[in-house]
Amino acid sequence: MDKPTVSVVILGQTYKINCPQGHEADLKESAQYLNDQMNDIQSGGKNIPLEKLAVLAALNITHDMLSSKKYARANEQQLRTLTSQLDNALAHQTKLVNE
Image (cartoon, rainbow, N blue to C red; front, side, top):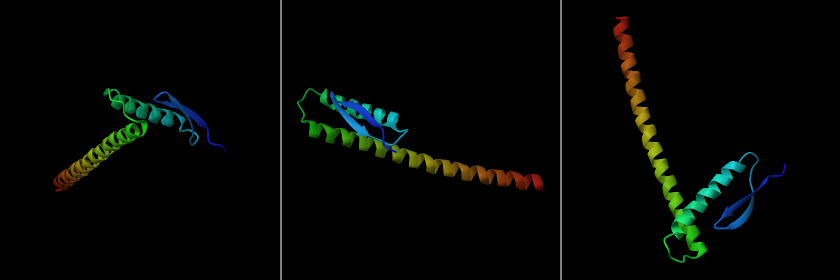
């Protein structure tokens, strides 16, 4: 099956990109996010070459992703700790009820 072609606009330039069936909306959202990031950097007033603009946006997006992963790992660890404490409390409660 052919992959659908999606048109996205980044900094006024239209790109036609093939993507897996069912992922068109995700691709459009990703392109819009990238476009927004690049526009934010460009709005600093400097005339930044497109290649450098793309690299800076990629670094910002990567930083955000890594920060989110770190936050998620910390939350997972906290959830494991709380689950363990809850299991221990339930086991203790069950022991008291059965005595």
